[in-house]
Length: 548
Image (cartoon, rainbow, N blue to C red):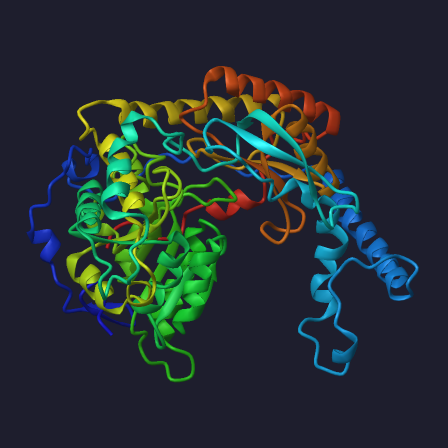
């Protein structure tokens, strides 16, 4: 297997690593490289993140609520089994009763008895562009959310606080999208082939060159699906005999890719450098289990912005550990590319890092770019290897040409290659909106998670009944929010997740904040006591050296 960094790891020792990128004079593209200018690649930016602990009574009532819900769930299952209550769930056919069941009844217990009661808060049909305002199709249920029917009424101009439309580029057609329309007329919608066969277009090459220039790396490759960019490329980079060190809060696509790879997986605590270093040190000292042979590769998987926590990876410290133990670093910038950094170039720019310090850049076009798909970027030998070995390149249909053009248009806007400063203004507006929204929520007394500069803003609700009431009441006020609970979050940490956009006006944010203030008093979810959680103690970095 080709080594993505150009060498092989033997218990932490890197052999025959190429220094091609260090010898090459890479274009800076206007990016601020404060760390490089000072001759120090370990630039440390102060991190202001909050993970406040909930009051004890809130946690008691949350677990009590789940306990009572479980008891009533068993009671209702008993009534359904005896035909006293109508069973709307899927059941095995009578003639298949003697077959091994496709699934155990308990596997759907949570879905059947809790989620079903509140599922009207998810999968709401949208019938407009996902801009700062959108339209929602009204639906009702006559059987407690087992089925829905549409009323024919459209809820107009709902404030969109849930879409990943960070820069406001997912919008209705206007003249700035004329190039996308022209590409649609010239190329059509689909490609009808994989990248390995007849699915590589000039638009794909143009986009890949632009992504490489945007990130200040040697090369890039684009894919038609963001989730598959992780899940189908990680197995091409590592395999049996390799070690993956994964943050405990990594996205499902990273988790799936790691599992499909066949590599050994070990989990470190979220953003905890002591936990990560311990795993790295043990990996170098002890090697593989039983045989004690050296690991072929050690790959660290992290995200730029964590989509459920709103936290930002401690990239400077992670790079320091990566260099110290000669591991490789894979950074998923799905939520951070375009949304953080002075010019929107993600956590690398946010920390003023040298792009050569990161072995594999991954990102998606679904958030800040108003499109779909993803990319892998880095050294040219890495990208060339993936062109030949990526499962996505070999078996998946190529990116649609109009989608590729939309990404090109958006990226040129952010880079200022369209001759305007609109892209930079959007990045700056997003940062301003994020700080304003987070500060106001904190002042109101809500518990919010994450970094003060992250546009992903989780607001903790804890109790499942309040999750449902929160979303329903806000929709009545024409505010669309995303609420999240178990299993996407820990059982007792259900939350609302707001996504701030550059397209949000101050009036929109104030309207949302006013409604949240009233909702917080109505549902009693202003839990903040400004106490530090036990979780930030994990972030006390005192146990690793910064120098190689």
